[in-house]
Image: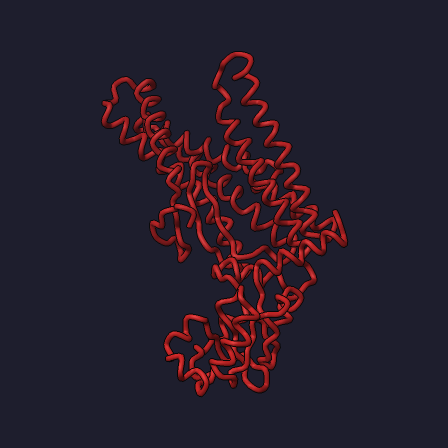
Length: 374
């Protein structure tokens, strides 16, 4: 998934590491080991490097705990957590879907910062009670301050940060519209992104200083992800109230299982030259299978006249279909999650309505934008 490396499971949640994480792990290890040697000259270089690595891993363990806070609350709400990923800017818990209410969304969002605040308090208490070895006390003190910074930074009210999700939940509660909450919090995130970029660029341009270079990276991260969130929210709002049947492709490639392969080749393939796979129905219009042009090669051409499509078709499982009255948003999520090019849309009685494609969803969105421009 996007170049990430799966390293196992955490409480049943797939755990991934992005290659950029190794870069920041090395930088933190080197930076803190150098700081320890400067602070404690009697430390050997090897021991300082080992302590630096342990500190870096502990810091990332704190990030994982932060993401697990979000994940556990989401799981209690019946939301599956698809993965937790560590990358250069920290961590990300990928949830299957959004919370159903603004209050539920609020608790998912605030759970991570709350975990970080609790960890900060625990490490602070340990640091005050530990005086046996100064380097260890310094490391524990650092973990306390980093967890506090992690909580406070994530509480900044702009997407994609936790504070942005909290703001989204509050606007959702006030307006009754979750998408307005996303758009508003995304705009705040974009404003903060521009401010972060400015704070990094000005010292560089005026004084040639790279002191705030990290602000540039954070600013670009906020801009990119906040913009994506706002765009996705607008799309979701346009699709609200629509069902899978509303986006069925016109003139979908549907054929009867009772026609011969000869008739199929002569009448259907020529009329639908853009399609290489066709859905097959029985006499009642119910979906029974699918046939592709390549399947014809398994039957000698002279036998096409006496061979019916249903004899060559491949049966289809119900798990690869979607009900016609299912919300279009959920159908699109199925297409994305299962990486399918199209989904057959059927009614409750199994009668086939047609094919749902990503292209047909895009066409429907374009029509809605033309009729109701933003």
